[in-house]
Image 1 (cartoon, helix red, strand yellow):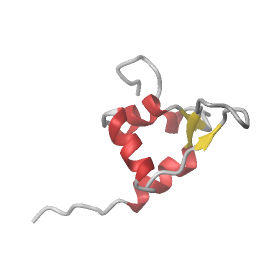
Image 2 (cartoon, rainbow, N blue to C red):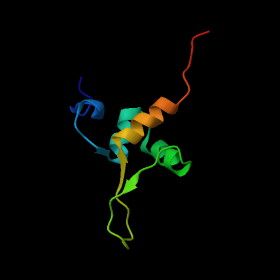
Image 3 (cartoon, rainbow, N blue to C red):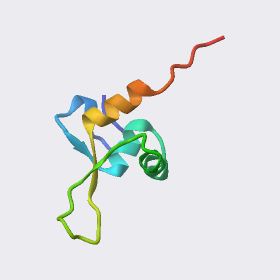
Length: 78
């Protein structure tokens, strides 16, 4: 199955690290929501920027994304 952008979902690719927009796309949420999950400690990205850099290069490991999804409560129909 391909996403709107024509790419396969990350879970079907051999992608180890996802950008914030890719993570948002996988979760079907806005990228600001992903940043909120990170700020709240629910998602733990890695920063690939060089030490001392003033900019960040955040990536979300695919295993971290899968663990986040698994940790979310299941909703059961009444």
